[in-house]
Length: 170
Image (tube, rainbow, N blue to C red; front, side, top):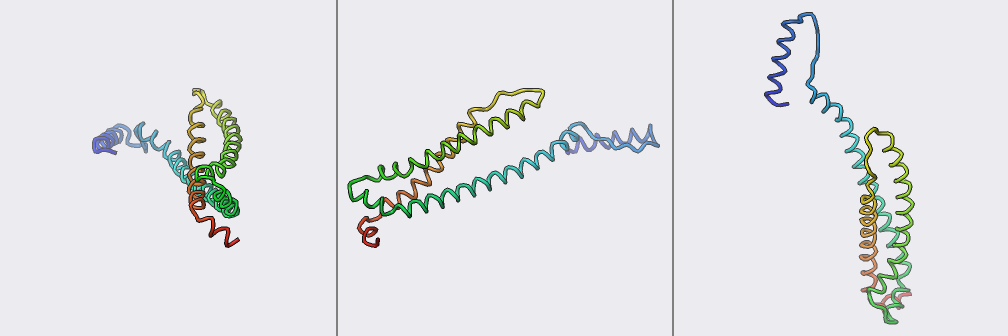
């Protein structure tokens, strides 16, 4: 609270005590009351934000592990494709094709469920807003780009290996 607000409150308390000496009143300014009302919401927002970041981190670590495992199992296939003349981009496209399909299905299911729950929650409010559809598209594209980046990094490492070394050890 600023010095002006503190001084105004002290002045108000003195005047109140002068005219109502037997009353024990605690007064707050309206902006303080509103600020205190939203403090719990801000704390919940911070906790949910951190939980969301942790969930995203765990999800991307799981995706990284799944992609690394899949590529490790397909190393021989990738080496044979490379010996037969496939380029790095062709190898990356064949690896990322199945993950794009999985991400599209997962996004479709999540978007439908999220839309239904968010729409039913928003209907409870007196003032209505339009559904933020562009937020769904942005979230889907962000997750798709992140998963393609993970597939690209892991696939590029395997595609750059010498196929003779991989096939000799198998």
